[in-house]
Amino acid sequence: MKKSFLLLAVAISLVCNAQSGITSKVSHDKMLDRFLSYVKIESQSIDDGNPETFPMTEGQKRIAQHIYDEVKAMGGKDVKVTLSDDYYVYIDIPSNVKTTVPSILFMAHVDVTPEAPGQGITPIVHRNYDGLDIKLSSGITISPNDPGREHLKDLKGKTIVTSDGNTLLGADDKTGCAVLVSMVEELINNPKFKHGRVMVMLSQNEDVGKAALRYQPEIFGDKPDVVIDVDGGNYDSFSVANFTALNHIYYFKGNDVHPGHAKKGKFADARTAVAYFVGQIPPEIHPTNRDGEQGYIHCYAIENATDDKGNIIKTDYVVKIRLRYFDKSEGEYQRQLLAESLTKARQAFPYVQISKTSDVVQYENIAYTLPDFLPAIIKKASQEAGLPMLPEYKRGGTTASLIVARFPDAIPGGSGIYSGQQSAHSRYEWACIDELLDIVKVTENIITEVVKMK
Image 1 (spheres, rainbow, N blue to C red):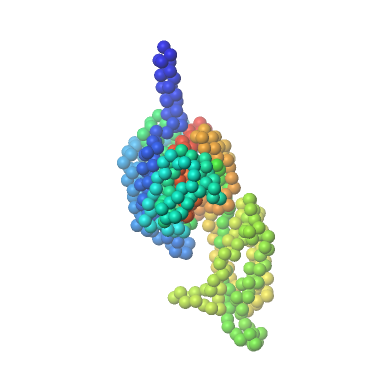
Image 2 (tube, rainbow, N blue to C red; image 1 turned 180 degrees about the horizontal axis):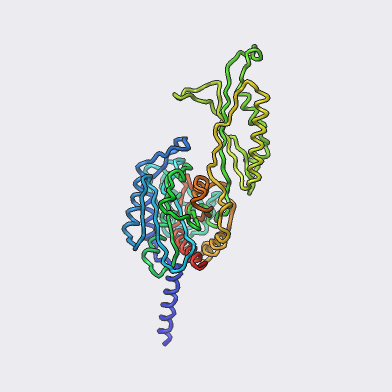
């Protein structure tokens, strides 16, 4: 009698969990194999310095084709999988509930950064991690005692994946890709998992700041109600705000006159004018003096201009300045400071022709359009998955913030959650397979919580 009751209880539990989507059927080894298959495809993007071009490597094309073929092979009634001409992967899974519930768009990116060696990636699997230093054949040591790698101490007994230390691993953001493809597989294979419309977009060239350039909102058609960016490196937090990021570019045109006859010859000393202009920016707003929710102004490049043939123009200079802020009023203050600096420079050096040639919003603060209910849902979903995350202000940008800046009417602001990547953009990069499984549960729990809003 007791045995029958126990079996009945277990059966009820399995049914309930299947309906809620909380119990993931993705196995540890399947997640490991999927992740390894992704990182072995070398998909470094190219930073050519041009904000509007969109170069593509063969590896980027291969990883997109690989994932497209993988998802297509899963089948799924009415599931639409699209590989765009720019090698973005779009997955559209229709709702299986009768009532109208908010739709969700999950995002990650398939390219990896060009900021570290990325050719000849050899992933190394460290099963049953002992909690101590990980010594790689290249001579690199990944230690839980290193700043920023303390989280390793929490992962004793888990499966850790690194490169051999000669290259990056590609965990940024192939962890997110592995998580989302696994989530999609769960939705397709478990018809009892109740969900609204779920969309997935895997982008290209995110790590060179161009993910929004070739995003095609018309593929999904309707504007999603919720956006989740699975591309974070902080295991205990998710973003509810990020910088608005602007780039200002100024051109200082000068001429050469012997300094002994400078006044008579109307000497346009562009070099000194640039120094004066930049020097007007208050040092207290420099990045070295800002933290938390404080923005900054940063002159990150002063370069000689070049002509159409790429030849240096010794008398002319280009000045590149970053503006970063969380609050719109702070942004107005920053723009005012630069306008005042520009006016003073023109007055002090009247023969130098100074123009602002570019004023580009690179990414927008997700907080302006983030759904009010989303932070509470992510907190609950992550807590129940055993990977609790708290809201944070992110001093950087995400795919969601890039797309919001370029297509403000196409998506709302979207939170960025942990994807399992650690020590990104370096040869010290690593990921924990067990955490990827936990993050699949987080995404499933988010879907379930959204369905409850019907």
